[in-house]
Image (cartoon, rainbow over the protein chains, first blue to last red):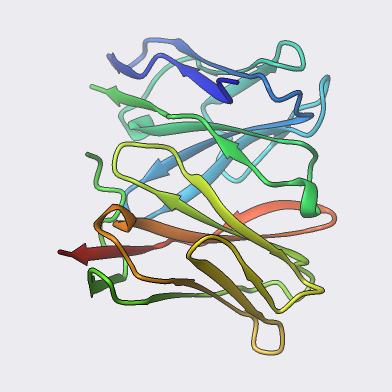
Length: 115
Length: 111
């Protein structure tokens, strides 16, 4: 079991460029999440997918879009990258959404720099 | 590694000491709590969880205590080792909402 995998590990973009961060989990989890982590800010939820076929905004969704491609895969897209989106991005998955089913397991992260 | 720990509260201990990391949570409706460990350059790693119908749970070298009266959670690490150096943060959830994460505490263990 690989758990949660993310690609790429590192990325440098210029302002205005677009890119998609990929995430996959092999634990047969229903729920998946995208977070960003900035120094001193903790983990902030960007978007989540409580179950296959649904997506919802989290705390900081502006500038991002997501696609729940199937049960395993959940991608995050930056349409026009801005320096404020320089961050470390984590994908996570959990068996279910909310309560004790919500033990989230995290991927290794993508370190994104926007120049 | 990243500066995830920038401006975080820091606990410095000697190897072999017991460490206690505290967390205050805000939502009285929260019924599930988790502690995560994050090493530099890595994703958060699940350590231990506890449900609100319990006040203590033990794992390997770790114990989580829950005081619902004052909305306080603590993580105790026995015989702390240099490999325990990391940022630790708590998270809370309720039956209808996903995890809310605290900002974390950096644990530094000196040999």
